[in-house]
Image (cartoon, rainbow over all chains, first blue to last red; front, side):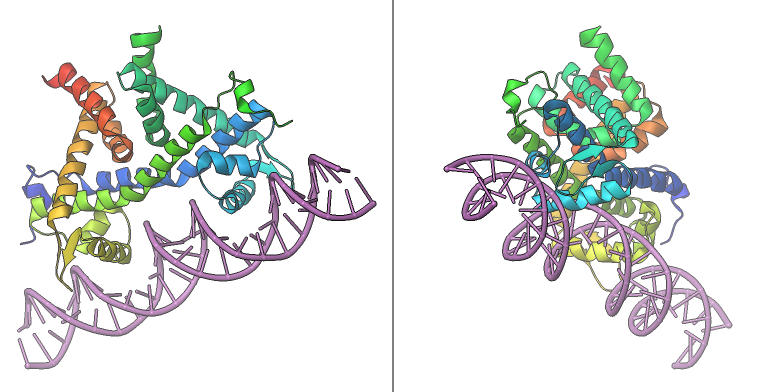
Length: 152
Length: 152
DNA sequence: GCATAATTATAGCTGTTGCTATACTCGATC
DNA sequence: GATCGAGTATAGCAACAGCTATAATTATGC
């Protein structure tokens, strides 16, 4: 009973290679989610209060402070932030660029959901997860819809 | 320089508790992503070829076979699948229910993206990641839009 | 300036998801 | 019915993301 899938095109299964590529993309996005969340949040905290302390980041993300410390070390190794011991954390140029991009994408997704008729609270919460999985093409479609529907 | 954020409402920062809740929801969704992907894929494989073998699951997901074996053990512990040694893997009642729900959500998201004007390839790939972060309310909005635009 | 509070650093644990390498079992072929 | 290839199981490793507990450091208050 080992029929090749090609003989049963009525099934829900698509081409295996395409399937793999979709999952690979989703895994890659999953890997970058936290990094983008951190960088985006750090940029917001600096923009709001001039500094980004570990305790504030931890309080915003809802995790413990050592979890933040470990992640910041990783971000520093990746060249996204610069931290001085017992001092605040700052974004490097590339970290700042990633933050700007993430924040813009986040903003578009949230605005799009609202334009679609989703409640602001749900839009905010869903956008936090969806933003990381939206490709450039889909983001552009979101932006067009949001602009043409409610704003412009 | 520790001003409470409430004195600077022009900043991009929202209420901390709300922020935490958004991130908590995103983390929870992330935790369930893989489980849903597996269950959905297993249902598809069984529906297509009558069985779901580890090698096929691994080939579809783009991971190694031991990775699949380990995950199946976890799914079995969670009561979602039933596996007999050296035999195939089958869905339990709750696993089947989760698969049906995941597949439906996936289908709606993909259809919605297509209705929005996104290319089929991008819609397929983005849907793989987005589906896990769409709440019931947003899903309903997606369904309404897809129905009113292209299908019905 | 010194004690204390707040913050950060570090150690060590758990659970998850991936990998390679290797042993085992099943089924089919001869 | 022994062999051999396909498929599965298992062992062991690494990276990641979370935690608690505790030490080190900075900042604050007196």
